[in-house]
Image (cartoon, rainbow, N blue to C red; front, side):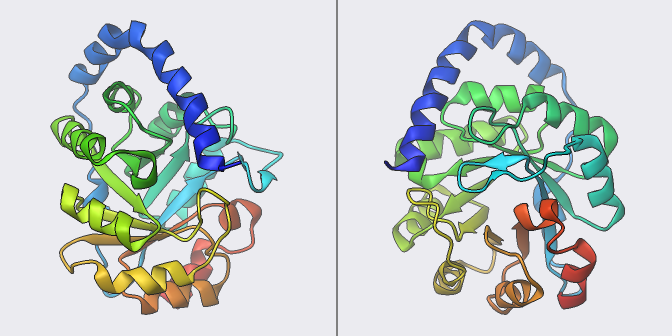
Length: 256
């Protein structure tokens, strides 16, 4: 079974359950003023890669990653050790995340926060604002071009940045045509969950210099970091390896 389609079917059911809360979410979103600049945090500083450190309890491919899991403590440690931004998994069914993790982390750190979830509808953009996100993930493979453009526009109107995720040349072209300002090359195939860092190496040459470029997934060793850096990416998103202690932000910094 295509893993992405399985996840999206469940997500669409969740979205229908959100619709009755639209007025409440809009009220909370409109009242918010404390946005942090996610895109600015990803610019290379003195040739160093920016690090988006991810809070991730589990995944469909890896199962439970962290038996002992305290999002606030993890976020504080990431900030203390020099992360530039934090990604928070909020999908419950497949990644054991929660929106509460986002709001809890928001109160504990000063870094910009990416809500990592499967955003398919404008109401999720509103929900993201209401719960403290500074940026959202938009997965090209999960969206029609019309929906991608509409959600990018909704994010911008709501003062959110958008990390637009691609895995192929066709998806990259769609992201750029839609006006993406931050592109994430996902080394993981979301249909099979197989990982290949060569995806970043292949696609990085097609990304214009003015677009912030992020390499996501499969970065576990200093050599992996060096491969991403050689591609000219501005940032890397690292989750599982940090959560398991296989690599540290300090070790990443030694490479970058």
